[in-house]
Length: 158
Image (cartoon, rainbow, N blue to C red; front, side, top):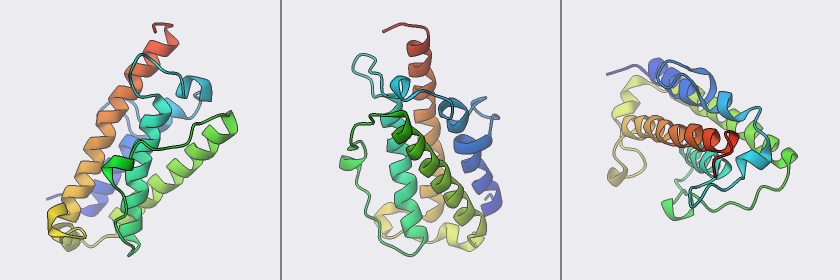
């Protein structure tokens, strides 16, 4: 089993600074993106902003558990966000996204390795390790969607 430092690094790679798996990460894809591109609709696909907010929703929810709080996130609400209406709103969201991702990675890195096998909140949610690994995999899944939608938008194909 990986140690928590390695797992934290894998998480940080997909969100903040890696290029090993997908040759990109969320920060590379989103940091300089105009809010109008981020919120542009391509057919019936989710917008880039909605996908980024969706991933952030889970990061923030798991951070709450890491801090000793309750697990309040629910799949049914994971795409419920107010419309993004300005560049300032987009940039504020991104700053929060990066901060919360850094916090998530820090929690994982300092977590005792034995805690990875502990039950995450309730047995039905499996272990800490499974939830952290799922967060990494879930993030890569949506990163792929973001990359494709961004290409469609920037190449003018709607």
